[in-house]
Image (cartoon, rainbow, N blue to C red):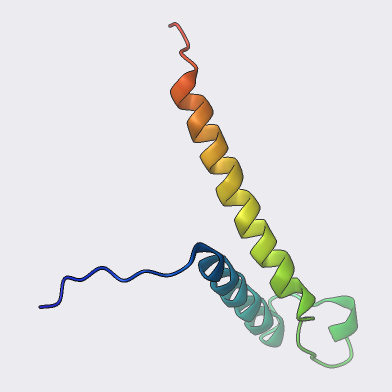
Length: 79
């Protein structure tokens, strides 16, 4: 069995996560879970710009989480 670890650039990871969230958003609107104003008459894909927005949200979430974990290591709260 091959136990060699595989590597992927972190930025590509964020873009792929954003893509799959965008894809799930398209599936949700297609099946009528929710609708955007431009989809009321007929279904249309969610704008590709949302893919970038989701990717940036993932990047910000990871950044804030890592920053807060670092703060948690440095700050000691007496109990």
